[in-house]
Each structure stands twice: as C-alpha cells, then as structure tokens.
Length: 386
Image (cartoon, rainbow, N blue to C red; front, side):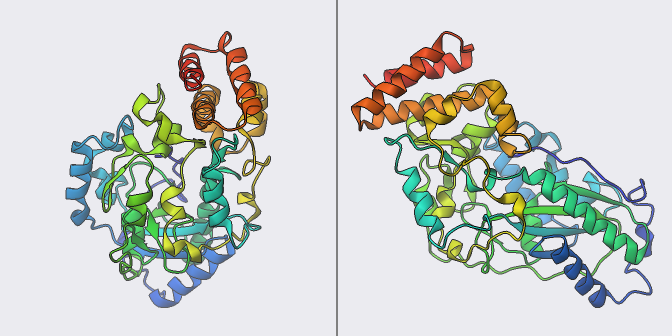
C-alpha cells in the first residue's frame, strides 16, 4: 500500500546480459557470501535470491483482487498477473535479490511493545499514534539508495548487468519473494515474519538479468496462534493470510483519498497514520531488531505527540516537519482528516472536561477555513461529544 520506486539500471538495457547464465568464472556460493557481506555494509540485515517462477501465487492474487480487497488501490490490479510474473513485469529478469532492513529505532526501549500498546489505549488523553516505521526518514528513499549501492557493488565484481530496483513497489509480490529466499514466512496478518526479527522490517528487491544461485525458502512458524486476527480493531484480517485492505486502518489513514467510512471511524481511535496493532500482539516481535541506521530514529517527537499539538500545525509547518518523511505522502488535507477523526474519538472517550473543551474549541475554530473533506470530518468529530 505504498508508492513505487523509480527504476534503475546499471547498463540501461535489462536483459542484454541475461545469457551469461550462472556467471562463468565465478563460484556461485562464494559470490553469494560476498553479496551478503556487501548487503550488511549497506545496512541490510539479510538478503536472499529467488527464482522467477511464482505461478503458485497466482490463484491467491486473483482471488484477492476479485474480492475487491485492494479497495481504491487501482495500481494493485493494473498490471494483472504480472505481479506474479517477474520476467513479464521486467523482461530479461533471471532472478530476484530480496533484502530486509530492520526499522525499529536504535534507541527503542526493551519494553517498546508495551509502550506502544499503552499509547493506543490513551485516546481520551489526546495522545496521537503514528506507526513506528513512519516516525523517521522515508524508507523508500533509504532502501532505494542502498539497494542501488548493493547493485553497484555487485557490478564492480561481475561487470555491468541489467537490473531494476524496487522498494515496496507495485506490482511486486514482495512477501512472496521474501518467503522464497528465506527472509521469513508470511504471517497470518500477511506481513513477512522472521524468527530473529519479528515483522519490524522493510523489504526491497533488485530484479537482475543474472542467473544467481538461489536460496532455500523459509518454513512457517505461526502455528495455531490467532493473536493478530483477534487484535485487529476493524476485523480487516478476514481469515488467516487474507487481508481486506478496505477495512485496514493503515489503508484508511494513508491510501484512501476520500472520506473515511463512518463505520470505521470509531475503531480508528487515536491512530492518525497507519496501525501497528497486529504487530504489537505478535509473539515473534519480542525478537524485533533495532536498526543499524540513524535514518529510522524518531523525528520531531512523533512518538509522543498529542493530537492537539499536531492539529495546530498549519500547512507550512506540516510540510516543514514532514520533509523527507513518508507522512508527507498523504498531504495536508488527509492529515487533517485523520486528526479530526482521532480528536472526535477523544471526545467520544470522555475524560477530563477541560481537555474535552479544548478539543471541541480547536475543532470548531478550524471549521470555517477547512475544505469540504476536512469540514465533514470536523462535524463528525464535534458530534461525538453530544
């Protein structure tokens, strides 16, 4: 549910060098070990190599799209089954390098899960909740740059080759590729899970025209656990391994451009950008790993901000504070829309009378100058105090 990265190629012609097969003159095992060492130097915690045969994923993809679970994310369906056919998506592709980058901030405390869960429960206190991954630098920029560094390092070793870099980009089946390279398995919440890192990591890919040595797939370790399904505030995980994005709070607060459906507003609580609930209850996230990079360190106190403090930002302040952040992608209007819903939920939750009066006053003061989208959500929010 994020935007596509720009393509990059080392020689401008992906597929031109695809006839080199297994790279004659190079020990495939030795090359893979060097590739892993270079990846660590670039800030990745793990990489793997997958083949391009993903036919077994096509049925699930077709069913997900036919059910309309992608909502308004038309780009999910635009390329059809090319999402499961790397060589059709990028002609000449012979294998895919997948990479994992942990994003938990370097100074995250040992009790970070308990702290995050406690904040979600403080809607009445007016605390704002932003997904952990979005509090630092935009991961698209970080991964894209470092994936290119990795590709350049490989080119230094083997010579020019065709490639294309993707960072959480449609239409790549990122989790499917990650499971096939041993980076993790698909959890019941549909995110990738690793035994040594939980789910707090990003994925990126390099489609290459080199037939590299492949890695073994990961085994699954969710067992009978249903914690993520039980915890989802909107029931968006409609079955194990199946997500209806139209109900997901991450979709509603980030991807959805129009009004948030009335039926889900109360369940959003104080979450204003994304939702981590399914990850916070996952037992495997006790093994979540801190990032080795400063890029994902929290900026501007976004992990402890209040709704009223963020509501006070004008558009200029929003643009300044979100420079280089994934949050800027939603734009000021949707940012205000999300905050209005959260402020309404603060009023609904009751609590301190003086605090409620301050929230109502702030909402009312902003109504006159708001656009139609934000004004509609302000009116809903004010009605929650009735």
